[in-house]
Length: 84
Image 1: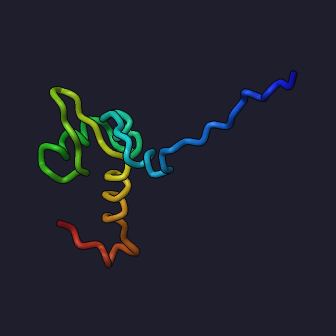
Image 2: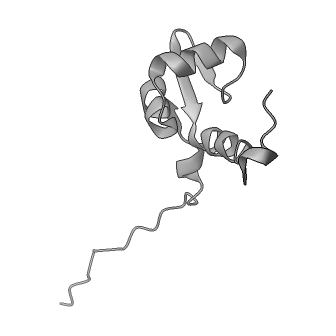
């Protein structure tokens, strides 16, 4: 009798981009942006901050949106910065 190896390697069918499309909490978003939770709450009210998602009382941010928002605010020098 021949025994078969029942061990198979599981290959994820999800692309690596799933990490960036995942939603994180307001606290995690504040940590990612190096800001306080209160600051990003103010940004939501004024429309300044990154896109957010809200379901009931829960607020979530998508990692990709946070990264894109940061990139749009990068500057090469203070002379290239145009304050809004």
